[in-house]
Image (cartoon, rainbow, N blue to C red):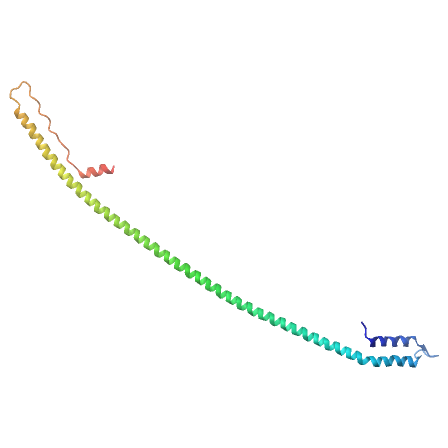
Length: 207
């Protein structure tokens, strides 16, 4: 939208264009003094108002620019504050992640140490149990071997005594038979009883 001064200037230009030239001249014109003075007077009156209006516009422009600058500065300051806060939070998070990883690693290491110790203890207990069981079985084997040997000796002694008695009985019967009898009773064969052998007993049990 044009100002009043611009409108008056345009009216003056139009007025000059509408004026007639002086006779025998192409540059000089005939003007109405009162009408031209009226336009100039209005121009002079409007000039201060227009200047004030432009000054106000300029002032408003400066105020607008200052306000915009203040808003821009505030936005920049807020952005910088948020950036610093984000950086601080990032540092805190990184520190928290580092501490969490360290805690997890320590827990894994302790768990592995406990597992290794338990495995070693279990192996030691297993080896000890195997050794203890082997010792018990060895002692039991010795006891059983001694018992078998003792039983074998007693059995052999009993068999020898029984065989001797048997042979005596047979001999006595032979002596009681009458001489010159038509048929003599043939003496019974001597019974041979095998001796008791603990080793053969163990082999038969193993089979």
